[in-house]
Image (tube, rainbow, N blue to C red; front, top):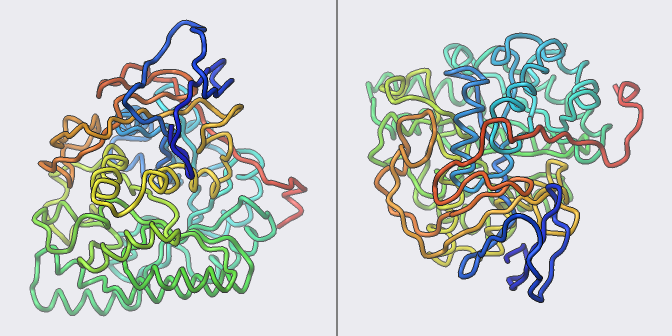
Length: 454
């Protein structure tokens, strides 16, 4: 068994979906099934804190297919961003549809972030928290001109982000503001320059969203969070300079959490995938990959999210097209094991921290999720460290028909995924029926009159 600090042998007894006993001495057989994990590693169920469902096939369909992909990769809690246009209208009127989609279709647990897109959403934030159990609020910095058209409805300006951070600060832990950090003014000029050159390769897309656009926006949001005293989560950090910025901000007492994604740890702007590899922010350079791995090891980058989006190849034929992103949840853990642990970049304990424990803590699910402890949900991922698999899209059980890791041989794979005591994936096959999953709701550490907080 592996946690964030130790590796030891133990037997685990599960009852009614929670861990009842952990014993270093062999236990007598109890219950309907005994799982022999001899020669394997048992780790806390993986948490993917970053995905986007509902853009192509509808929220119900994608909950069904993409939670299957999640458990294939050992993920037991799958977090996704809600936007009003994806769920059919205003949150207060349509959120129940999302809960119903999980209860009917999911094969793992799910939790949600909510997109704050306009002033009305700011006034409703206390209700999202009290009624929906959502404590994480996502803001997307305004893009200009064509960029605004591609960003989805109603990206928010800095003034609204500041007001949202003030509310998050008043709520207290574990409420958190999540901000997609890219400076729109810098991108607008850089993209114009690249287009005038007539460039169409993947590296051109990266050059149209230069690292200074990300660095500048990160610094700007960190300054706002520092001023307000708000928790801040920066998703998909791509740049080595971002690691240093977060490190220095943490030293100053800013409550900032950095996340990166598997593709930023493995692929560069010169990779052969072309338009399939477009994502915001874009892929960077080899030196950024090295610095991000160091950031994980040093505890500066605390979370790994996949930014999973089940797109189809036919919609990604142009690097400057409207469709960006790709699937990733099914390969999250194998990438950390193969490219991280097996290449001596991070330890197994660090794999557990960055893939489960830290996200559970940041998003208010710990110790219910993110650890193997008596009383915690029996969310377990059993791993064969020596299993090597050549990746292909069919293996990953997603609605998407491609993966950036197609043809890669990754060493270290989950062979069983257990959600609240129920085996949902075994030897690569999803064995659970749709509807096993539940919505994970979060609460404040010190509940108070939320409506009064506004």
